[in-house]
Image (cartoon, rainbow, N blue to C red; front, side, top):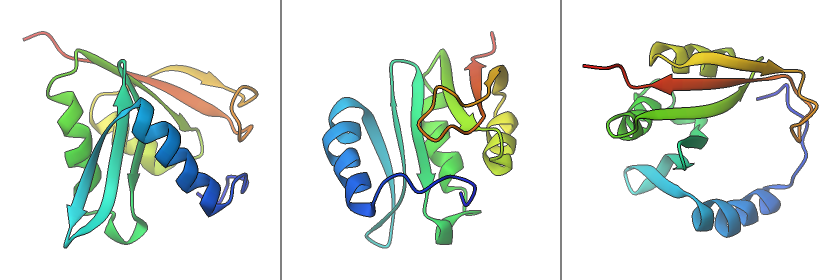
Length: 123
């Protein structure tokens, strides 16, 4: 996401994933040809991270990762940046709706964001 400031080094990002995300969240990974090509980290009704490697987008990997949560969750929440049009279209296709928008003052990147919520439809 070229609109975001570079706040951390690659080493700091790896440390955060290893010492925070993998310790505190449930993580599902997508593996293709013995390579991790995407992951989703979640817990307590929140999607904290959904990432697909740039050279593996448009291959339904993000869809499969998200569907792994939607199958069992009664509801989910997540944040994304207002400028991330691709993510917004992606989540809205699955029925996520905007609950709130902010000016970004409370996130590390200081970038306007959106809180999305999804609720399972009653059968």
